[in-house]
Length: 322
Ligand SMILES: [Zn+2]
Ligand SMILES: [Zn+2]
Image (cartoon, rainbow, N blue to C red; front, side, top):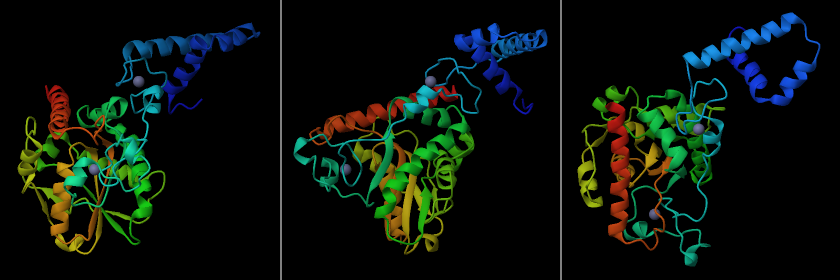
């Protein structure tokens, strides 16, 4: 027994007693000393008291947590964090469901066929839905910073998938910045928090240098709800600025963020970075919004999907600050 984690110890023992009926019976059948039985009884009382005083449910699915952890998320929810699979746009990572293009490695979605983004390629770990989306919300709106290391590991996977296609040498890693007002309101920039975790765990990722101060958001763009794709692009114009052009000039840049929704933010940041002299820009995010069948979807439907997605995020944000 280590008294550094008395609750964890009590938790484990009592859970074993309560929920592992076989184990409990075995122990009960043993000619245990009276002192041991008293100790078990005391542990159970202590744990019951702990659960009564500090009831803990998974913050995503609300089921009772079976262990004490810094991250209040159950194993089922963590195991539900799955990577993207299936054919994707070779530029922006959008899912492509057309059977015609399934085997073509350089397939582009309809959006990227129309306009080539200012970045080389964007990759994401998973789809922005269910557990992954809830976990990101837990960090951003629930202020649960212990979600950052988990999200960091997912981002690291996305970066690792991109790494073979990056040119040799050091790549500058630039988190998408928040406006100073929003950052002070939230207390942190989630993109920076996540990428710091991604680059250092379980060991430092070679070939990347975090440059968190290079890009700044000089204008608070506010909510983009109800804006069309074109209006959003306009809304973001002039929102970002490179503070230290010498730090990006002639360098390859990896832009990182928590979510890739419309691509408008990533595109604007990439545009500004390239104008400041960055050689090429790649994008990696933890999650990405996927459309059901982007290759065939009409632009109006696409826009409608984005609006709905951002509306849901905005509602979560408002609820968090209510
Ligand atoms: Zn759960
Ligand atoms: Zn695309």
